[in-house]
Length: 197
Image (tube, rainbow, N blue to C red):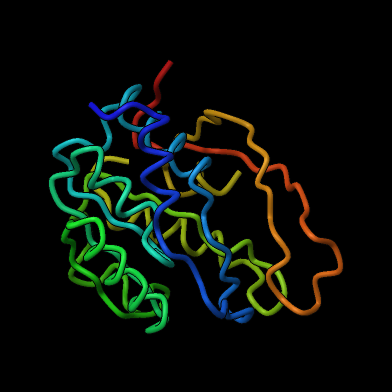
């Protein structure tokens, strides 16, 4: 199994957004956060290796490719933005990995034929600010619908466990950002269909 530092180093090689789209709230998932999310998912819960993994709002594919590096059986990346998909394809070619990529609006397309199709969903959903209020909860609802193992999570019949409190170092990405970077406190949450200790 790949070590966490090696995974982070590999993910640092990936290309990210050239021109992020504010309407889609595009922020690259940092290699530091992605490596820790995936490493914990695999090493504590066996949620990655040999699993069917979906990445909702895959962006440039950091979580998708990281899951493949940790031995995912198959990964499907769902992404609405063609420019981001082009970056995923470039990253896949550079890393010599393959995945399915579905160009769609996950809110409109899913679950559809993907209902209860995946073992694990990884995602760094939009925060739900600006023009997208509540979209983070819609992503969670879709994640619950497309997995067959998995106050809002409980309404969906899910059990939530905060695995880590992280600091997301959000770099200045858009013209309206006044600071060079901002540290945002975020939770790394695992949702499952059965209660665990």
